[in-house]
Length: 341
Ligand code: KG4
Ligand code: ZN
Image (cartoon, rainbow, N blue to C red):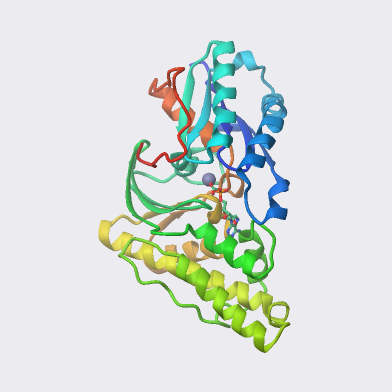
């Protein structure tokens, strides 16, 4: 029997410090330290994020190794997020991973965060199926909204993307207008579950077939709320669930329309979602329904692999390890890394 491969993954691109150990494609541990500090500022403060990563990284990595029940000498390689993300945050993970790899004399593997969101589908887990190539992945997060054609593990082509805000921003900025805490996406989801999605109508943007635009929706929500609050100062509290359900419905309609276009253009009916917003219950429901209605096969990641996590970095590291695709010590963090790089 071949020796098992143990990879330590480290993720520090935004405001979550995470470390994970996998054995081949199975996750042994996946520790995520969220940074509460940002919620009172209504968004991520880069300098605070970087400092919190510095405080969290050692205990988070230690916990990941302990929970995996291995020692650091068992590790076959160290994988880390090279980008895209906040420079100060990326630097913490990058320098930590470099030093650890150097100290342990094991290969260092740089990972593209956007590829990792997509490749989280290849984590071996009895409860979820893996997409066959080629498939379409809708990557929806706080920083990105893309439709990607995935031909093999590392051959990806962006078919469409947002021309302004990311879908996560549409959720978070709408939530902020409603006075909800950051990140507002999960809170909109929670309130929407109790509301009527057809209560209020918001306009869908007109952009290219596979592209997205969310800045108009945010402005639409702002003007609508301002107008209603003038008429009734208690409008938000009296209608919060309906407002959230209507915003969420509009966003998910936009996403589904674009996916339908992508299927029409490519003929590919294997559809995956990835990224923080794929935790949203409405998009998950609608994709499940699409199996019945449109004959798609859909791939929905487990909750813990949707928002930023290091297990997705570790699985990508593992797939690169199998290709002997290592990084040199000169590798540097890159804030604006494209999914195809
Ligand atoms: O992938 P992610 O953790 O970080 C980035 O790489 O951006 O995504 C974070 C985004 C935030 O905008 C957050 O509000 C959104 O994902 N999000 C959700 C839900 N859970 C997280 N949006 C809508 N519904 C959810 N349940
Ligand atoms: Zn992400």
